[in-house]
Structure formats: C-alpha cells, structure tokens
Image (cartoon, rainbow, N blue to C red; front, side, top):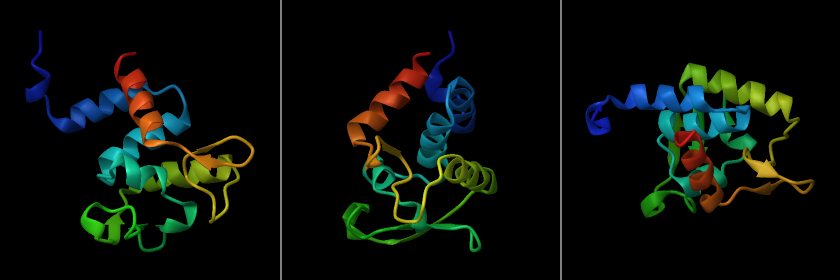
Length: 122
C-alpha cells in the first residue's frame, strides 16, 4: 500500500480531477488547488472576480484569511476551464461561480467539503 503522504500533491490533484463526474466538480478541485483558495473564499467567488486578461482572480477582504485581500494568479489550464464553465452555465459578473437553484445561491463551505469527499472516495 502506498503512503499517500509521500505522493506529490500534483499527483493527488490529478487523481481527484480524473475522478470528477461534472465540470462543476472539476472547477471545485482546480480552484482549491491552482488558486489555493479556502472554502469560504471559493463559495463567495463571483464571476466578476476573474480578470482573464491579466490572468488573476480577486480575493475580497471579507473572505480572505486575516482580512488580507488581493489577486491570485490564474493557471492557464484552470482559466480555460473556468471560461468554459461560465459560458456553459450562462453566468454573468454578479453570479457566484458555484451556485445552485433558480436564484443562483452560493454553495456552502459544508457542500464544498462534501463534494471533495465524494470525489476522493469514488
């Protein structure tokens, strides 16, 4: 049996992405990995927070740890997936990236943990 603590993080992340069944699951895993976002930062991320021209995503003060704020660089692969996801789901700048229902309410941090656990255990 392989000790998973010694497996490089990129290999673990690649396995998670391959286990994803939907584009939304891919966005969740890649957001957490490529942008190093915390659950709270991820669930409150809006489409308008992405700057695809400068390849950055804005993290708001109220969601960031220690009330820091700023930009996080976008990985080109992740940026492409986010653009496709936004187009596919017809999201506008005020919509949360991860939402549900007709009112497009944001996911909860509990839901993010649940989705990642489901992916990891599949």
